[in-house]
Image 1 (cartoon, rainbow, N blue to C red):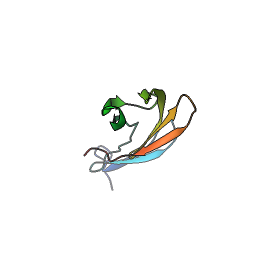
Image 2: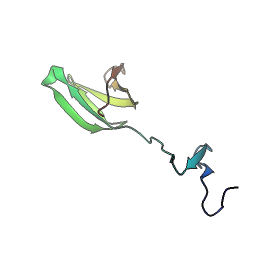
Image 3: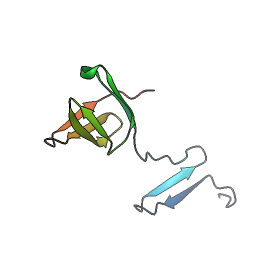
Image 4: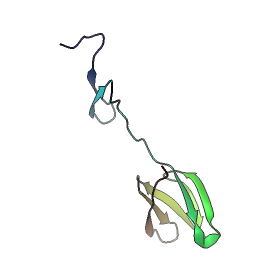
Length: 94
């Protein structure tokens, strides 16, 4: 029987999406809210873009590109001139 004033785990429901998560003393609940990336564009003298997030714009080769997706291993940008999407795979820093 678990003591009520010192539980070893409990279940809670997130308001936003009704997801149920279990929180334990030795395994806290962790959720990724979003990603931020540092990018380098070698063709233009290693042009660097630091701490960019979803929705940020970058100017590459004279064309504005908007970051439309960031995952743990990919960044996708869409060119403003023709809406062409380009996905770049990367290795996150440790």
